[in-house]
Amino acid sequence: MKKVLKGLAALGVAAALAVPAMAQENAAEPMHFPIKEPPQLHWSFSGPFGTFDKEQLQRGLKVYKEVCSACHSLNRVAFRNLEALGYSEAQVKAFASQYQIQDGPNDDGKMFERPGKPSDYFPAPFPNAEAAAAANGGAAPPDLSLIAKARAVERGFPQFIFDIFTQYTTAGPDYVHALLTGFHQTPPKGVTIPSGTYYNPYFISAASTHMPPPLSDGQVKYDDGSPQTVNQYATDVAAFLMWAADPHMEVRKEIGFRVMIFLLIFGVLVYLTKRKVWHEVAHSH
Image (tube, rainbow, N blue to C red):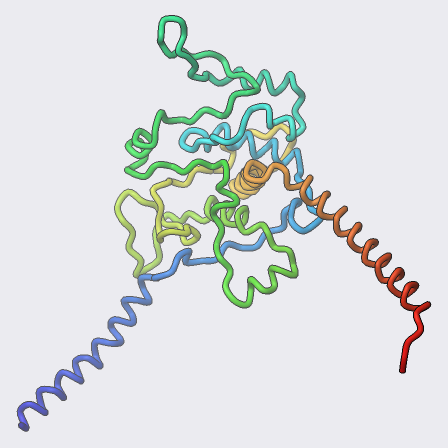
């Protein structure tokens, strides 16, 4: 009996010693992602009266075209939609003609390529998801059409309560900007990442991603004198992707404002009518 008790005591000591070691190991390997929350930035389109900055959107389109389009598709955006960014019809036609669009079949039953037209959509850089995955380390780059609405870090209690009153609706662009600017050459001590991946504490799915840092200073030339920095590129392309995901945002906000004004006036008229009607009715006591 004494031997059994001594054995249990020894096991208890060993377990007690093992707990701190496990805690340190778990602390070194975060179990929640992203490891860091994206900073909340100021956007021209934030809030109930926010609008898109067309010059910023044009810069973001340039960053997408020269950098992001090499891997990421924009399947839900047609060239004709770019007129909303301030381009003329002639400029849109010229922009679309720079792309080769697969069409057909022709009279011989074969597919062929032709210059793009405003009615065409941005062509994908790969013929299918399998080819995209094979060219990118086994992970197919996602389509960016809705990425600014689909990818956002959930804000827990009590932040989401405050967001209702502050009208915070830019979690998607905040995440895109943080992801593009958050790459680190080496992970911190205690964090291991798979070979061939890149550490990014803002990535929403893991501690690292197969996507290498896509931006570098001076990579894209701006004609309007804006800073040619990673931060500026990330800000501009995040704004452009927000427009791509929600191109009718300004119209929706304008209609919502008109509805609120109508309801306010209607409510006042209903209240005055009620007072007028019941004022002339004798009340029994």
